[in-house]
Length: 126
Image (cartoon, rainbow, N blue to C red):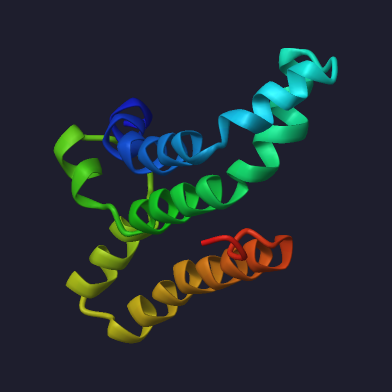
């Protein structure tokens, strides 16, 4: 199930990071190598700070969409409990107040994650 979910949500993480790499100015990478920085130092000191908004966008897409994914688990036949499956079972029970309480967890997690990303400055250059 983990392999299936990773395969399903990989493009939502890859495409924002790829577009972030495309937007990197070649002159900064050349300047870093001219100043004597190696490839690892260039990656962590020059490229990573500029890729933070892309990584944040990709992780928000991936994380928020995967929180509500319960159909994939049913199709693949996984035995894992995901929050979407728990909400679906409580709605079928029918126990709407408990399902509403379970839906607050993904919302709270996403709001906290967006707040942390905003505090880190990931949305300044969007």
